[in-house]
Image (cartoon, rainbow, N blue to C red):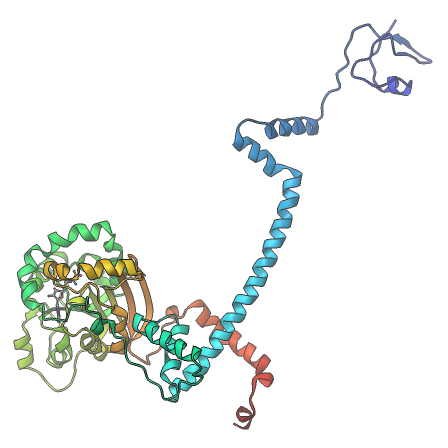
Length: 452
Ligand SMILES: C[S@@+](CC[C@H](N)C(=O)[O-])C[C@H]1O[C@@H](n2cnc3c(N)ncnc32)[C@H](O)[C@@H]1O
């Protein structure tokens, strides 16, 4: 007798399906064959891949290892359904915020444009000029103090600031922790020999090398380095990118070190000049015919051959940690602008007051010691000096709690280079802005504007 194990017929025969079918509760008889289930034989249903995966998944869900458990939760259906909801919600939130942000930005741009037009025609009052700086994110400490006074006046009922000018709060003059400027030539004459050894460690721990590298990357064409000191930027100079280089420092001994370093590092570069003189006298120095060859000149030598016109102009003027030791840093920067070609750039790496009060307190408390040790005023408000020099800042960034100032500046009124125009300025300063303006032009036009 042929005995066949089959499951489906067992169901068709009305038996309760179970993985175990015994001969006692199920007997199937067909027309053709008759079989009897052998007692105690277990019939195991083979599991599908899906079932196996489900079992594994459940095992992972109950795993003691939290990472396996979290992995399983992340794969679960309920989680992915929830996730979709969260994603949609955050997308909507992002959109709403984006619209709000753009609206604010647009309003800011509009206000800035209106105020700038007023400023150009000379009609802007002091408050409006400060507001322009605020909208551009370029307020200095003294400006913040002034704006606070204006806000107080507004709270007290003043609604127009026309004709009002408040006292300047110049930090570099009024803050008694900022020591008066002085001529540091003698100091650096005595410091020259030990200078490099002394600053090496300090610069290493704050990665100043990368900032110097950043500065030197900007060098092109005819370059002037002011307050070149011991030539600490030389190792980052790419001589292939420049036409000539002139070094200026008020200390002859510091210059001597730069000279020796340069000769050693760039022996075949001929268009280099080494001038001993002060940044405050730069324009006079340039009127003299300073040859851009590898010659050293003293201030006296140069002024004796002075002519009336400025013959030398530069593509790049750089200075690192020099403003803090000049006796007139504002005049020095004005001289830089006078010697800059129209397309030229001034690149500065300076140290000064930081962004946080606790940092400034440290600088203030140690200002005297610093001056004695390094001959510099490290707590100067560099922003104030820049603003007073009337240079136009193209890029300003700060590091080390705001105490390291990295500046790219240009002559006032000269055109920005393509790569210097930022994203918002590029897209909101021209095409999109114009489109938006043309869209809302009829509604915003005032009657007087209409007459124009
Ligand atoms: C702190 S050191 C900086 C040196 C160098 N630039 C550096 O990054 O290490 C300041 C330098 O500025 C020079 N210096 C000070 N007053 C100056 C002035 N009025 N004109 C030109 N150089 C000046 C000093 O002789 C000194 O070499």
